[in-house]
Length: 352
Image (cartoon, rainbow, N blue to C red; front, side, top):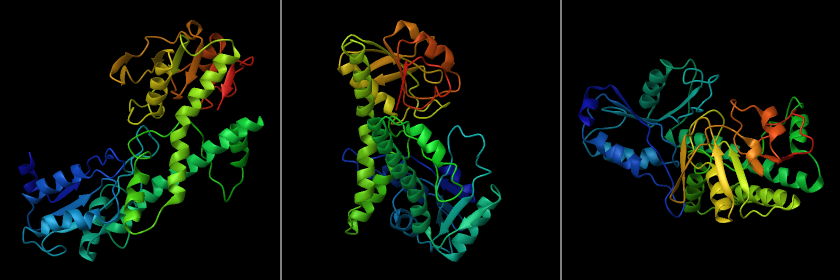
């Protein structure tokens, strides 16, 4: 009930910000939330937007709706942006441990939003305005996206040269300065990394700049599911088995370990492509009981019986898996996460 918000001193808006059909920002949830808050906003209230979005959203979308009520920002009501920074499934860094970036439309707004979050986390980081705070979140996730793209391409190059990318990155990470390790995988997933760079690219294109580096990184990341499918095809062919009719077991469909979230998980595209090619694909995920792929509902297998399949494909390294048992039973394993590192494989494991 929106009416219940009338009595609140602070209102925090944190709604989804997906992409449209043409990969343009879809801020309809923000607009709907802002319209709802505008019907009940009163003098003295603080409104904070936390949803990841392009720079200018707080000032261009929220402010006019609230100001239309005859209220002056920084005097009658207060408006700010503070990016959501939670890492799902991460028990080491929780809401209370992660520094909170805050940007208010006026100094009074900044002071009030800083006071709000200081009650939750010991470190609040004020910035000059909401546009800066909005850009902070986009930079954080774009930084991750482009570095993952770099290591994904590096993984492809290493495989061409017969070198282990996992060994390379592990050794490089011993340098105590000037290097931060990122790890390759079958593609980006989750509600942030695949979409946030599009929000930034869309905004800067309106300003007359083409973000070529971000665009190229996105192309590399989006080609990884197809690259993994080709690895499966090659591995089966090398063993005299066609993809059509091959029994493939996918381990893990969540986009990251030990969570049940499949949003934009590369596993869904990989499974769909293998099914289109005629493979008999089953999956096991201790956190995801069922998925929908091209209108078909697939249920997680009740147990991992690797010996019953022609190939086992590791897409998510859940902690629940017994990698030693899986490797010993499977005819061949394609490991896109280096989950089987240190397990004797007798040549049965092919790593990204």
